[in-house]
Image (tube, rainbow, N blue to C red; front, side, top):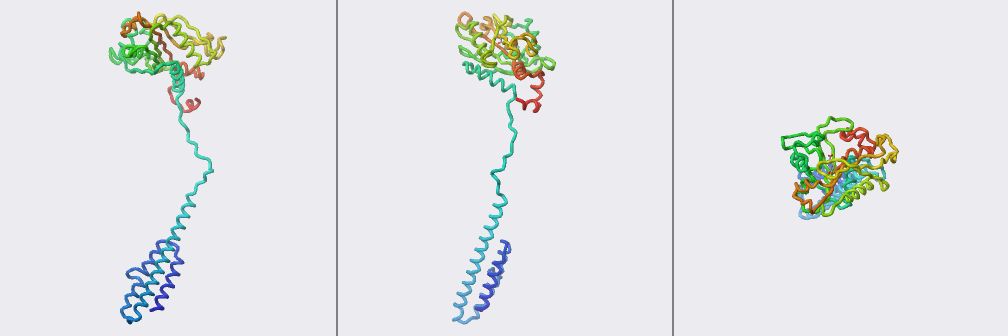
Amino acid sequence: MKEKLNSIRQSAMELIDKCTELKSLDEIRVNLLGKKGELTALLRGMGGLSANERPVMGALANSVRGDIEAAVDAKKKQLADAAAALKLRAERIDVTMPGKVRPLGKKHPLTQVLDEIKDIFIGMGFQVASGPEVEYDHYNFEMLNMPKDHPARDTQDTFYITENILLRTQTSPVQARVMESSPLPIKIIAPGRVYRSDEVDATHSPLFHQIEGLVVDKNIRMSDLKGTLSLFAKRLYGKDTVTRFRPHHFSFTEPSAEMDICCFSCGGKGCRLCKGEGWIEILGAGMVHPKVLRNCGIDPEQYSGFAFGMGLERIVMRRYNINDLRLLFENDQRFLNQF
Ligand code: DAH
C-alpha cells in the first residue's frame, strides 16, 4: 500500500507539472482526489489493514493528499499568472502614439458676430432682453406709432397669422414690451429672429436677425445716442472707424437717423463693397418718439430715450465679404468651416 501511495504521488506530480490548462488541471484533481478518485478508492481499502498499519498508512495517505492539493494550487496560481500576463501584453497600449483627432464643432458666423456685439454692449452696461417671435400687431406696429393705415407698414411685408397676430417684422416690439413692464431707467439690447415675406435671393430672406437697442432715463439726448453708437462702431470695426449720422425717418423715433461708417475696405474712396459710396450704412436710430413713451406709460416730460436697430446678416456679410445671404442659412460645412 505504501508503494501504491508513493506511486500515486509520483505520477500525480508529473501530471500536474505537465499540465498547461486550468481545465485539465481540474480534471486531474477530480481523478485523484474526487469521490471516485484513485486515492479515495485506496483509502477505502484501509479497513483491511492491521491496527498497527492503519495509522501509519493513514498519515501517509493524508500527506500524499496534502502534497497533491498543494501542487494543484501552486499550478493553478502559476497558470492564472501566466494568463494574466498574456492578457496584459495583448492589451498594452503605446502611449506615445498620436491620438485620434476628432473634429470640433464651432459657432455659426452669425452667432460669433452676435456674441461680439452683445459683449460690446454688455461692456457699456446694457442688459440683454428678448421677446416673442409670434407677436401681436399691437406691439409690432401700433405701440410703435404705426396705426393700421400707416404707410410705413407697407415697407415691412408681414406674415400675418390672424388679423391681430403676426410674425414680428422687427425686434422693435421688444422696446415697447420692456418700456411697458420694466422699472426705469432702461438700458437693453434685444437680439432675435425677425420675419418678412420676401422672396429668397442673394440679399433677401424671409427670416433674418436684428439687434435692437433702447436706453430710457432722465436727460437722455441725441449726443448720448451718437456717443454710444460711435463707440460701438469703433469697438466692432476698429478704433479709427469714422461714423456719420444722416437724417432719416422711423415712425417710433423723432428725430431719426441712420449711422454710416466710413468704408473699411477702401477708406472712403469708393469701392465694390460700399458700392462706390465710400460709406456703409450700419443701423437705424433715433430719439424715442414721445408718443411711444406715452403709449408705454412713460411721461415724456420727465424721461427721454434713444433707440437703434441693426441687421445682423448685413454686418456679417460685409465683415467676411460674403456675397450671398443664402450661404448663411444653408449650413454647408464647407462654407461654415471657414469661420
Ligand atoms: N426696426 C427698424 C427696421 O426694422 C430698425 C430700427 C430703426 C430700430 C430705428 C430702432 C430705431 O429701434 O430706433 O428697419
